[in-house]
Image (cartoon, rainbow, N blue to C red; front, side, top):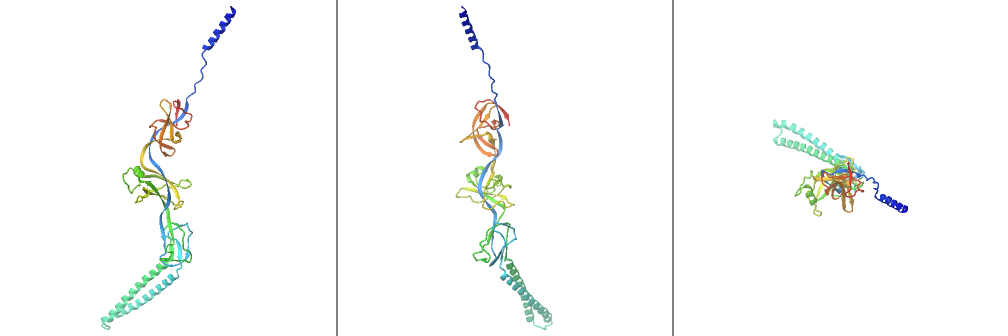
Length: 370
């Protein structure tokens, strides 16, 4: 009987142990995530163009007279100022012509004085019939011819001075001077193999050609045909050098080329950049980034909120119930540290600003506005 009672006691103890409630574990708190609101913004399309830098304009330096090149006063590829003497010709012949013209003028003046004196003496004599009318006419004609000779000699002297001045060849513009094929001692001038001595490129302002496909141009401009004034098409024009450094001066619209490039079907818009320190050189490559086209309203989100795997772009949206939802989205252009979203997100929705690697769809979170 005692043995049966002991067995029964153990049975009730085991049964009570099986029905005793287990202690509850502490449930994990929802994860905190930073969120931002997807907001609309007025933006323009941001485009990048790679092109060459060109000079504002160039001046061809040609000697006006023939002669032997005697001096060169510049270094190839260096800046020159308007009016600087850059070449000097051997001017012996021109100086001799100048002296001869001066002597001819003095001789003409002396003859003019003699003719005037003869005329002035003849006038009173003709009044008293001391000389004939024919003699007076002769003295008058000699005086008039002598005065004309003086004027001719003066013009010849001016021409001789001009030619003597042409022995000094000066820069016609400010700019960067190119190399000259002519050397000291070469015979240069019109009709010789050195009719052109060098060129000078004005780079106080430089130009960059932006080649825009016609279809893209028409879409961005909102027009159905080409216009030649595209000043309102471009904004915020920046130039980046080959090493990626941002050029300190902002560009501006200059003009639109009149012809469309047939081979590529593009319209060429020329933008210009100030170049006071001559940092930019003609022929170097540059990257121009500009806002182009009409302003449009678009939804933007931070770049940090977007995850990209292969060709799929996505982000996490936090609903009004604080539940995380995975969304695939379609991206537009980058705008600084933000990105345009063309589909997948609505205005005002809260998106995770970053660090959503641990999130799962349906997970409850604590949104914290950034």
